[in-house]
Amino acid sequence: MIMATSVIKQRTIEKFIMSEFAQGNLNTQEQVACMLILVQKKLNMSVEQAGDFVRKAIGINA
Image (cartoon, rainbow, N blue to C red; front, side, top):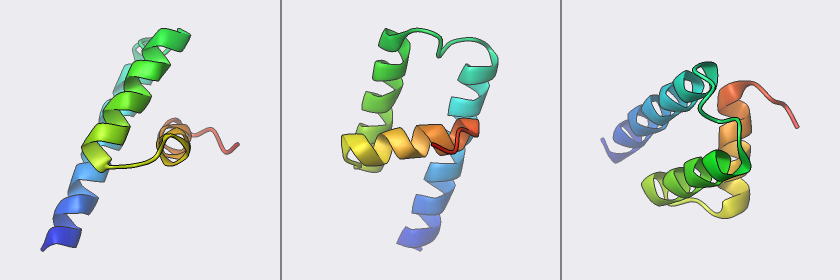
């Protein structure tokens, strides 16, 4: 059940990131930094993992 909860949490955060990106709320370095901190805290990720997660969520395959 823990794994399912984790997947649901990740998908919810991915949808939130996509929504914020689509609304133009991830346009500045400060906004992106805040989003990375949020992802790090909510999903217990490193900076690198959070960056990869955000890029994947908005469709940037870097």
